[in-house]
Image (cartoon, helix red, strand yellow):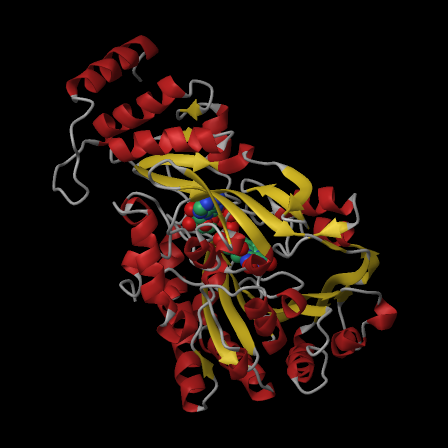
Length: 520
Ligand SMILES: Cc1cc2nc3c(=O)[nH]c(=O)nc-3n(C[C@H](O)[C@H](O)[C@H](O)COP(=O)(O)OP(=O)(O)OC[C@H]3O[C@@H](n4cnc5c(N)ncnc54)[C@H](O)[C@@H]3O)c2cc1C
């Protein structure tokens, strides 16, 4: 190992060897050695922000560079920057762009895609310290001002002290930073649209370093684009989200044995049918079947939610009346329920996800369930060899009423038409050990999703929308929005606010406008 004084001497020499103002074109074939580029950008950041820049072998680097839901997202950034204000981010962006250094922005680290919020060849911006949570006013409306480095759990805890909440993610450790950039599913979609539809203002640091407010009147095109447009436009530092009162709720996990998987699927089919429960905007469900590679069995573990008490929650009776192996659902506070989900954080396992949407109907509930059960059965021998493997199918109903609400609140880049009816956002996920198993897992998920798509198209059940927050890296997302009409607008808006394409070329992210459809 190099002694620290020798390291300092070598890095200082390397910094001097590069003229500071030398232009570095994006698309040049100019080759950087990892150490030279690393030295230049990280050292410049370290001298401007001495207490906010961390190199490998420091505890902060170790904590921040490993704070990801999926271990497949773990990489080795050159250094970690922990900004405390938009001004810090602005200063850092000027250094990163002038040195043409790649960087990644990590919010809650819950997007399970390698390289979405981390980098092997650049600087990790960990948003942890951008963590304000305040109740305030925005143009006469009560809002929560949320720093984008928060997780949803602490946000709900703080707001609950005032009897309030917001339309954030459903599980405690999910990041405030990334979740609304994909639109976002909360427990309140049927009543209030996507999570992003209740955002009244964003504070964003643009590629130029300029700090701007973005709302319905100021930078209104960017306001629309940020609602679903993912990490293509800038670094969001604050969200101003409409608050609303929330008192007692009924919620919990329900589990079922393998023998009752059919009953669970029937319950979802009834729920989304006429007057089956989904028509009640206070009800929300997140229904899952899990294949376990140790036993080869498939069982259910789902969450059910009602904005009211059990006695009012007739919308959920198909689930509460089932034969259940586990049931933690009760009348309780929202924070007591969200606290129960705090274990969905950092995991030692790798995760891979893929998504598809179907036009909501009882038949469309059954199709992916059947194809998933057939697939895990057909591949049982292979899947059982994967250590700690769990393969999931998830039903997430999105109602037409929620889409009406999305448009009524001002709309978004996702722009789904309520006239096309309700939809089912179907997530197929895998959690497993061992990078060597990735090819098998990836192929299993891709084949399954492609099969569901093929069958759904034949049966006129296919709904052309891939939810960014659950999508696989290889899937088209932004170009499907608004039946293809949003994409040219998103492109133009990205060009307007980021003329040099910093967020396309230097910033990490899974769903870049410039990459759309290229990874299939
Ligand atoms: C256990 C679990 C539960 C989930 N539950 C839900 C749910 O209930 N509802 C839902 O909608 N989704 C849910 N998701 C999906 C999740 O919302 C998305 O993966 C989302 O991107 C996570 O945001 P994050 O900040 O945690 O992730 P990160 O991985 O940190 O970020 C995701 C992307 O957003 C970018 N980003 C993050 N912060 C910023 C910022 N401040 N400015 C600009 N870009 C930024 C990152 O660079 C990255 O490209 C869940 C995921 C998991 C693993």
